[in-house]
Amino acid sequence: MNLSAQLQQLSTLLQPYPFGIGGSCLLWQLGLEANPGDIDVVCREQDFDAICQLLAQHYQPEAVTFNPDFVTRHFARFSQPGQRDIELMAGIAVLQQGKLIEWTFHPERCYWQNQICFMPASDWLELYGLFNRPKRVETLKRYLAE
Image (cartoon, rainbow, N blue to C red; front, side, top):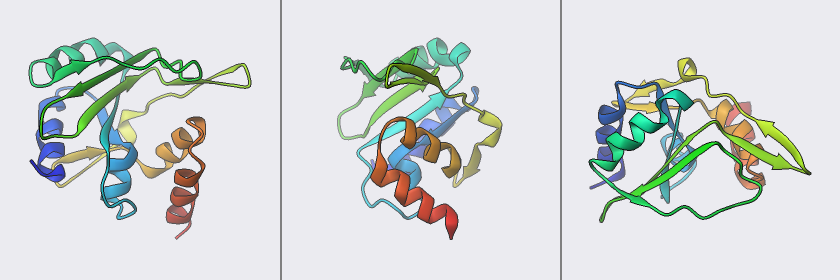
């Protein structure tokens, strides 16, 4: 299944909940990335368990690797042969120099394009800063400046 079809299928499945697709898929949608590795989905904390149950009906839950700097309260990974993995996040938080920094998801900022619900580039600029991804921060800064 191609990426666009998978994102459309996923967006239809998750439509009952506020969510947004970001990360490398957002960069792909903006023309800034050629081949996203996975699908990053952000949702509200109160919807995380229900979305996990829904995804588990269609995808295989996968083990998650522990990262001591990534202290997001809810994180899950799902896979299916022949498709990109899905990483679901809610309650995003990181530790930077021992300090807890939390990020708030604003689903009202998300937008639909080609039957896919995307997060705004400005949100992922903040997130990539928190995740210490300087190349992606610079890519989005250039994009937003244009």
